[in-house]
Length: 120
Image 1: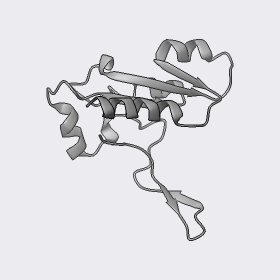
Image 2: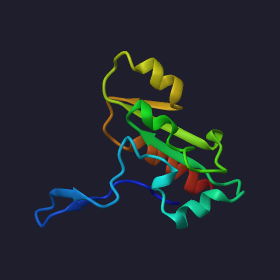
Image 3: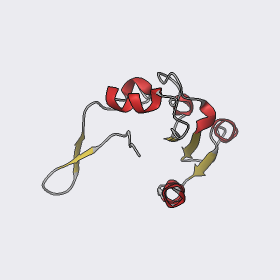
């Protein structure tokens, strides 16, 4: 399992003081952010290269296939975090497989990962 995410840097008081480089943000979330050695994992023809994509914006919905040659969108489970029930809900439901509303926990993704790792 490979985790591609921003990593927080903590100071001596255990308070977040920054993020590691490169910083991943809305406009660069794609296969281009993945380091070459990790990209090799996804570029082969292996059938078990699945992606669990988690995002909190409309732009995050397609960050799995941009820059990854052999990846199919059907091999991605997309979880969207929508902080408010508003006019974006229909779009989130259309683009994400699972939409978590007003939930700041990682309980659902953690349960999915646990189920996958137990099954292997």
